[in-house]
Length: 453
Ligand code: 5AD
Ligand code: SF4
Image 1 (cartoon, rainbow, N blue to C red):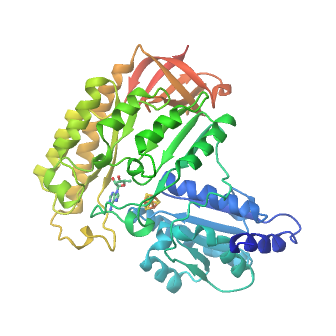
Image 2: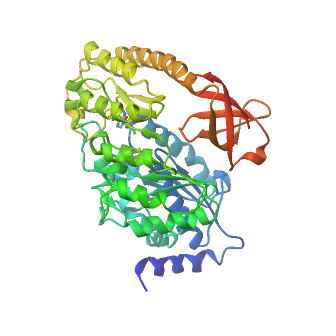
Image 3: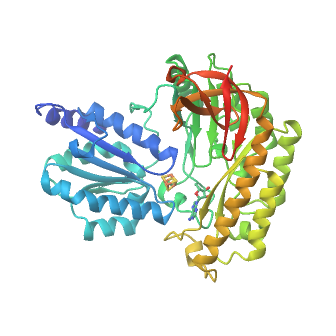
């Protein structure tokens, strides 16, 4: 019997002796990829006899599945670990564990060892399959079990996934990053790029669609760097050929690998949404070079023009980092300039955060935090105007919306259109999980209102 299965069964032998099934609380921070890992962790814990709970006070094991991308994400996790100390004191059998990207950082593991010794289980992003063995060791009384080894790529194809939603599913297609942007911790905590076999991906999606899933989100740290025996555009075409009423998005592509062929594929495949989240990071060529992004603002604009020439309404969103080391006023204005030229539907913006171990962390920086905050606010203000103006193009049109939640407004429900636009409409919660045609009546910043047709 493989090691993994042996330990699943050993842990199950222990949990089956409990009066009622022990409970696991998993908190996943950060990106969708990390949340997707959390769904696999939940799958393994279920195999080992654990039930899942959303109440950490009721839990027998608490796992913090962490993100390392910015410092505030890490600070939040340490705050949460600190707050768990009293729970551990009240309940000595409680297991507190930390996994995900932070667990792959040496300074974090050292800090846990020195100041948070009640965190008994620590495993990194490469060691998902080791969880049953590590947990068994903890249950057998071993103090502080840590595994931060960089194991060869393992897609955990055989691990069941416990999904949080029945009509939307995340499907990872590749893992890791080879790009080494100078600000980014991801290549250090997630390793090199590895792509899943296309048959495995197609068969997972077939199963999901057969179970009534309406939206598939393909995931990868650089999703368009997918490279197996077929290319990413070919994978999209094969997914598009799967029978059923569903739509497909993907995140996040890297502009360097976003080719005209990819754009043509999106435009030509009905089930692939006409939208792309294409992280630009900066509009200044000097900063893009210092970030090691591998494209210029002109390359980016060419791609935008290529797709907008074919579909003027094509929806594009992006990520921007403000305050990269020594970003001058001129560099920053180049970013504002490109925001005006592209007219993104939406931007996700971040103030640069220094990450230990990256090349940018070694760069001198003469720009103050105050200046960075001022620029950040200026950028948001500009984008708010652009989004509000840009969203007006949808007014009077009918959009297909997948409804997902109740709105904060009484009697309203919210969802996303095929173009990734947030849409709210009056309607019953019976519509949640269903596609509905919605006639758009008004545009606000970041969202539009409409009436279900
Ligand atoms: N500081 C600020 N933002 C960052 N991102 C990645 N690393 C950093 C960092 N060190 C942002 C990028 C990326 C998004 C997921 O997070 O914009 O696209
Ligand atoms: Fe955070 Fe990046 Fe890890 Fe995702 S891959 S959890 S964004 S550090």
